[in-house]
Length: 319
Image 1 (cartoon, rainbow, N blue to C red):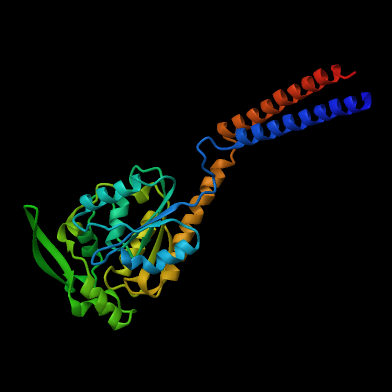
Image 2: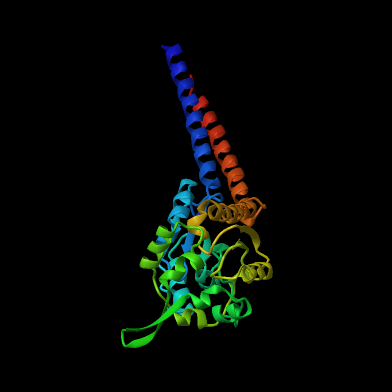
């Protein structure tokens, strides 16, 4: 009986040590976890903003590739009613997203993202795909005056009225969509774009930019060498001025449709740079990290002391 009692007591001591050690491990893990539950390696959300004469479906092939790479993607509808109106709307979409964002704009969508991203610290990278990149005080029209393209002869104006106001919409002429807008697509696909196009208000190109987010946010740019909608020289000028990481491909204006793999590759570069920057910030020995280390050390000391005292107390009860 004495032997059994002794064995039982020792077993209780061993079990107590294991329990305390388990508590120590749990406490250390809890101390090491980020307070907000996020990990430093979280991938950014990619937001894709289409341009004039188009809709979100123009990003279809890019979306599927990004999602296969594990990214959350949003391609909101750009209202195409004017730079101030459109950028305010896209800014509201960005405000609904938790975590870092890579913001991408095609064509006129480039002007929109340059305004929408201003003052938003969650936007880590801007990507311009055959896009407008106006500086403060510039508009699509003022840039086109410096760098003429065939777009000026490819549109038709149509008056519109809505909710008590009126204005003028621009449409691409159907016979110009293939040669000017989408020359490297099959003619049947270009015709489909012509039939389903969304008009853009003239104010979208006439309104001057009030901010230029590319001055403070890292940017990437894709230049289409055969672009007849926006002059490639304009795209190069803008990218150089912004200090953007730039690639050039043989493409018409609709590179996102004709060459989705090249567009996706550039977006992934921007997203990868965003993630690397976050990881770098997370490993620089911040105050938060120091507190975590101190918490782990303190937890280990407290729990270790408790284990010793508990062991001594149990041993004194042995016969």
